[in-house]
Length: 238
Image (cartoon, rainbow, N blue to C red; front, side, top):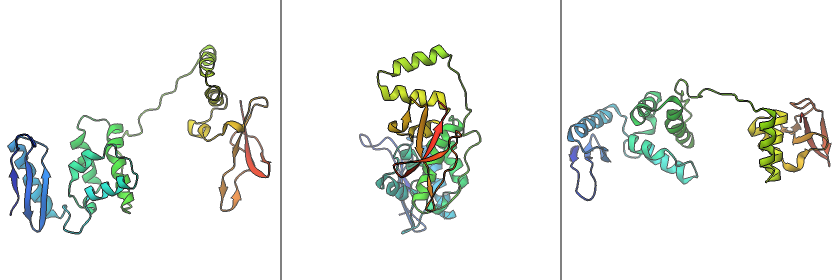
């Protein structure tokens, strides 16, 4: 049966559905609209996509299938539902830069670059990588957002430490951040037992690379050392 629009059904769905088979490609998907004029345009678009080979043929992996496989393997589910609805049976091979850019514009017409990157570009890139498709995805301009820097007055910092000391490890963690200038990710990798308040030192295991220990001098200028036969790296500064 050729492609046609199935009208909304009371109590079941308020949307038109595209159903039928065209050039050997079977379709069964929602248009996401209850307005016939819009659904008709989507039907014409679907025919055009099939003619251009953008819709997966039988046996060819689709974006929806790849997304489901990605989620089944433990991938992040957030933001994928709108993408699956948008791409439907689109062949993975057709998910190129233009298709991704168009999806971002269609799904988030008022979204800024960071929103589109987080909710379109990043999840699509993850799904493609899981499907072993190595395709460089160009992010929208401005996706990194602007970084802001703020400062605490000494009395503000001390008040923060005092409040955090209700949980001693948290208070210690904030002091480590404040007095060393570590990045958050770096501080999170430092174990509580590796912090010596009395000597104003913190220790971090040196990274092993190709069977060797990267060491010699730490980022903060302290020498590398060994504790209990385990190479560690000394980081000073607080």
